Each structure stands twice: as structure tokens, then as C-alpha cells.
Length: 320
Image (cartoon, rainbow, N blue to C red; front, side, top):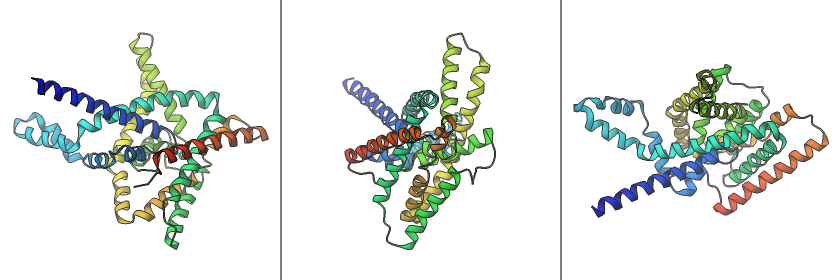
């Protein structure tokens, strides 16, 4: 009996620890310039995360769904263990909790303090590019071209010269697919991709409205219609993320296995080219006076200092 109690306590502690890992990853992924993949590396569970994510295949999902058949239950249990859901579920819940909390704050600050919020993000993004480029080689022309291609692509997207096809829910779906692919890569933030695509504030606001509407409905003062409107966008984004997880993320991982340095240089180039993307959010709320420029620079410096401090505390960020 004592063994069972001890085992139960150990299992609960493991779940709590994994949930806290998810909180840390969620906070990082909700802030541009800080990667949840980097947090996974620093906390020592990146390999398990990648193994579990790559085990999420349609075939294994079907095996689990067929578990109602007594003859297939052993295989369904094996599929569940292979997907490591006892790790991914609490990790995912922790991430959702963190993103929900930060989403509400971002939604409010984007309206009340856009200079402070997006100026800070500019600093985070710029400093993360510096930190990551510092750990990568620039010894050949191919290295320079790979970094330059990523930077140029991001600048074209940030300036709206290049845009994803579609609008509305189609754009939200594609944004979810691309953002979730970035989330599992050290050094690249999912929220950075959303800022680059102009969907960061949109999705943070939709998530905040969705959670508020659910709270109001549960308390009896809201309606189903109020839940469905933002809820549709959130669900489409999540579905896009799931599709991206089994498609785009695998392509990126294959590229890393094939040409690690060139792929990382391209990805970090995307970060560097995304530095001016938050300026659009500030420009929508304020004219570019000398005072606005000065405040933006001040907050950008603060964001950069925070990122450099995190880099020093972590002993350096090494993109996998």
C-alpha cells in the first residue's frame, strides 16, 4: 500500500512538473523573440518533446480511435504510449494557460499602451537575432546567402509586399499552421510569426474575447452567439496548428537534418527581418513624431536588455 501511495504522489508531481514546463513554454511562445523550443532545451525536455510530437501521426490516432474493438485495444494502448500523451497533455494545458493569461494582457496593452508593448517586442526580436546569429557560422557564401534569404523574405512579408493567400478564417488557419511549426524550434517564436503575418493582436484579442465570453456564459450573463464568434477563429487557428504540426513542422525538421546550419541561418534570418514588423502596430495608433520615435527606441532598448539578461542567465541560447 505504501508503494502505491508513493507512486501516486510521484505521478502527481510529474504531472505538475510537466504542467509547469508548459507554463514556461507558453509564456515564451506568447512573446516574440523568446522561443518555447529554447525553453524546452534549457529545461532539458526538448528531445522528449520532439519525439512525442513526431509520434503524433494520423495512423496512431486511428489506432487509438479503434480501441473500442477488444481485439485492437493492445495496439491502441501501444499507440497512446508511443505518442506520450501523459507528457503532451499536461504540457499543452500549461501552454494554453500561459497563452490565455498573456493574451488578455496583450489585448489590453495593444489598445492602451501600443508604444510600450510593441517597442518592447522590437527589442526582444532584435536582441534574439543578435544572440542566435552569434552562435551560427558565417564562413561560406552559402551561409551568408541563407541568412540573407530569410531576412529578405521576412522584410517583404513585414512590408506587405508578400502576403499569405486568403483572408479571414483561411488566413487564420494558415497562420496557425506556420506558428505551431515555429513553436517547436529553438530560437524561433510562434508569436513572432504571427506578428510578421499581422495576426498577433488579432488572435490574442480573439482568444481573450473567447475566454471572456465563456466565463460570461457559465455565469449566466452571456450567450452562445458571443462564444461562437471568437470561438470560431480560435478553433480554426488550433486546427491549423494541428495540421502544421504533422506537415510543416516535419518538413522543417527534415531540413534541419539535411542542412542544419543553412536551415538555422535561414530561420534566424527570418527573425532579423521581422524586427520592423511591430512598427505597423504603433503606426496605426500614433503619428511618427519625434516623441513617439524616442519612446519606441527606449522600450526597444529595454526589451533588448531583458533578452540579453536572459541569455546571460541561461548561459547562451543554442539553436538546435
